[in-house]
Image (cartoon, rainbow, N blue to C red):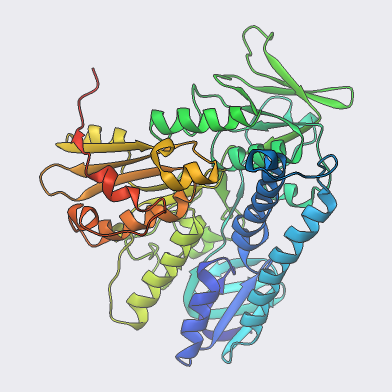
Length: 462
C-alpha cells in the first residue's frame, strides 16, 4: 500500500528545500527524501566547507606576509590542521543541521531518510515505504568522477568528499586535474605547508577559460610554490613503498611524480545510476544526466530534474535558479527559462576569478564585431594598497549594440566585482550605463568604468 503526496522531492541539495517550502506553503502535502546528508554537496563537501578552508589558508598566507605590512609576528608560523578542520566542521555542520531542521519543521512536509528508487512514473520506494506523487522532483546531485586510470585500483586516493575528513598535513599532495576543484585544493594545501603538485593532461590549466586567464592563474599558483605538470597525456598510478607514483607518459615511462597522497579532481558525475529511472521511463544522456527542457521538465509528464543531475549548470547558484524556474512556472504563472540565464561562476583561489557571459574565444568564434578592454590589477589602487596586485580585469562588448558580452575579473574581490557587469548584462543595457556611473573610491569596482572607457577593437587572431 502506498502513501500519497501531492509532491515528492528526492534530495535536499540547493534546489530541493526551497522548493519543498514553497510547495508546502500552498497546502500541498510534500515528501522530502534524503539519502545521507541534508544540504547536499554545497553544504557538506562543496562550497561551504571548501571556502571555509580557503579562508583558513588565506589567514596562514597573510600571517606569512605580515612583515610586508610592517607587522611583526613572534615565533615560527604553524598551522593546526585539526583546528582548521574543526572550524570547517562547525560551519558546515551548522548549515547541515539548519537544512534538516527546516525540512522537518515544514507544516505539510514529511521527511524520509533512505535511498529512493522509482517503481513507476508516479511511485518511489524508500526503504520499505512506497510513496505516490502527482509531481516528482529529482534533485539528487552528483559526485566525484573516478577516471579509468591504470593502477588507480591499487592505490589509496582522495576526492573532494573524502578530503573533508583530512585533519593532517600531507607531506606531498599530488592532485590530478588542473581545473576549479584541483586548483582550489592545491593552493590551500600549499598555503597550509604541504608540497603540492597539480597534474593536468592538457597544455594549460582551466582550459575552458581564455589563454590569458589560464596563464595568469598559472602564474598565481606558481608564485605560491605549487608545482605544475602539464601535458600529462597518459597517466598511471602505482604504489612505491608507502608513497604513490603517478606516471605522466605511457610511451616513455620516464616522466612521473611521487607523493604521499593523491587527490582526484577530474570532474563530476550525476547520482542517477541507481534511481530506477528506467522504471519511470525518464531519459538520460550518455553521461547519465537527466534530459530536461527549458523549464526543467523531463520527458515524463509530472517529473522534473533540478540541480547538478540535469547537467544544465552544476553550480549552487544555478541549482537555486532551477528551483526559481520551477516554482515560477508552477505557482506564479511566470514561465521562466533556463536559457534566460547568463553563465557565471567563480574560481575561489586567491585572488579569485569572477566570470560572466562569453569568453573572448567564444566571441571570436561567433564572428561578432566586438570591442575589448583590459586593465592589470597593478593599476587598481585598492589592489596596490592591499598588496594584492596579481591578475587583471577584462570585458568584451558588442560593437553595434554596446551590450556587454562577457567579462573576467581575476584579482582581489573579483568574485564580487563581476556582479556589477552581470546585472547590466541581464538588463541588456549598454556598457555606457557603467561608464557614466560614479563608483566609490578607493575600490576595485571604481576602475570598471575606467576600463570600459578604454575599449578597442577585438582584432582577429592571426
